[in-house]
Length: 169
Image 1 (tube, rainbow, N blue to C red):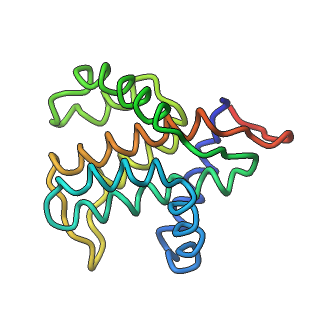
Image 2 (cartoon, rainbow, N blue to C red):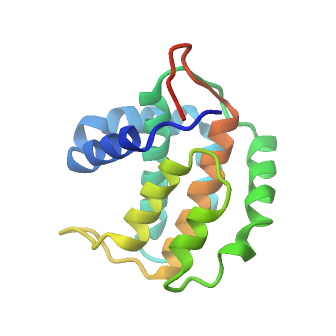
């Protein structure tokens, strides 16, 4: 698929971050509707420490919301989609490691579906200082969340048909 333009993704990301309450019902609905994908995220989030699992589920919801805001049609992700995307991402993980000062640049250099959405995730997880009331995540937990978001974005992009008038990149 064509990429949702970076300025649009950033605008949506800021709007969701600044006023999460106005997006909460849509995010909840989207997570519920994408049951297989949310089950995959919840299963993986269960092995994360502290609040990390809840953060992962929320951030997947933000990715879902961006696809929703982009319009078009989003089919339900299947287990086959999840497993295929998990394998696809798994084959590229060695190109990203280690999680050090060069990690974000390496992650951005790898070919990904909807890279602007994933770049916003990288910013939120690795570059932005936690805001008041947000738990600080260590790099290992942020890495786990990023991988889940990457798999989810790949699976969602496979099942997304942009609207006819979509002007992506």
